[in-house]
Length: 159
Image (cartoon, rainbow, N blue to C red; front, side, top):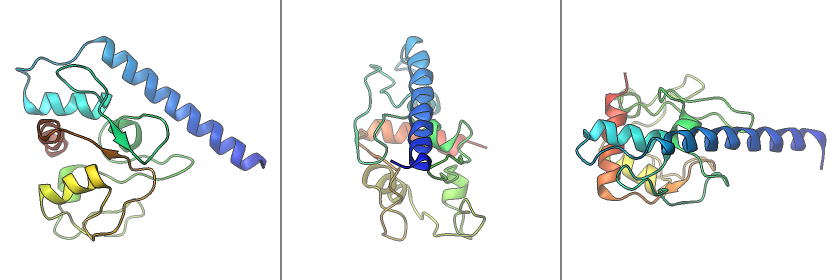
């Protein structure tokens, strides 16, 4: 194994460990009340990747090997992050659905998501608005309809 690969692997493990610590700390506070607003429930999902009612992890397939929450890759503000292995996009709803095209991490414009259904497909199937697979780090989240509704409400509320 060359030195660069080892450094990248250790950094990835470190990022995953930080995500697990944050998730564990938030999970200690227990899930939000079932009477919480849709946005609050979506915030819970975004930061913990757990069900807001039970605290159970939301299952996923593909993507990163270590369980991570949306915020671990896309940032607390949804504007994306740069990591040693990938650059994640800005997933604020207004960016995703911008008629001029979603602003990509490199500043160029990509395809716009034209509906909540297209965003659902990206989150649950890893398919972009152009019908192409999303980049390898993106997990395919197995969200319930309510969890997806909550998460979308949170993304729409991000400034």
